[in-house]
Length: 208
Image (tube, rainbow, N blue to C red; front, side, top):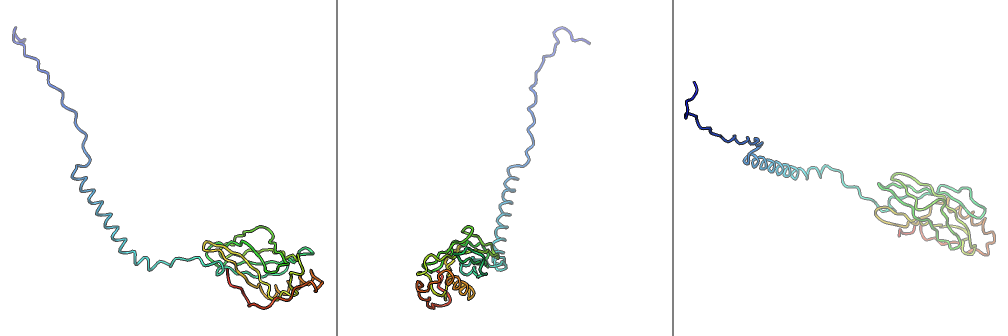
């Protein structure tokens, strides 16, 4: 059947349907609930950590403090070593009993006519629990400024760690006094140019 004349149906154009929106993962209400849950969880963990802090602090070891250099160092006299004809060479051992490194900055002595020279280089670092050997040359430059006998020959050793810098004055032992006296007698054979024997002042000088 064909439509008769004058019976054409009007053409109606319909707009295309709008594109579908992508689905939202979380609604606004779900986002609010999730943020509230995370905030409450963080608050609960913070309160729990604060509550357990006194117990953890009581069970933890006490912090280790660094002692003063004079408390962590021990200087000993090892013995004489081969030296030049005009110098008395000796070996010192510096022991570090502290928890941190210790630096040896300087070695001196109190006789005006005797100079001190440390072989190698300074400062020298002594590791924790370790020992460093120092070769020290004592040279007589003026017999009138050297004692007849080194009765109390102090050595001044300047030390440094992370806490302080100190100069430790001590006698490294009777063997050191005997060996140094023999070296002074050998270097200054004319006793008229000697100064009197050093008087006793005690086993150790205070730490500076």
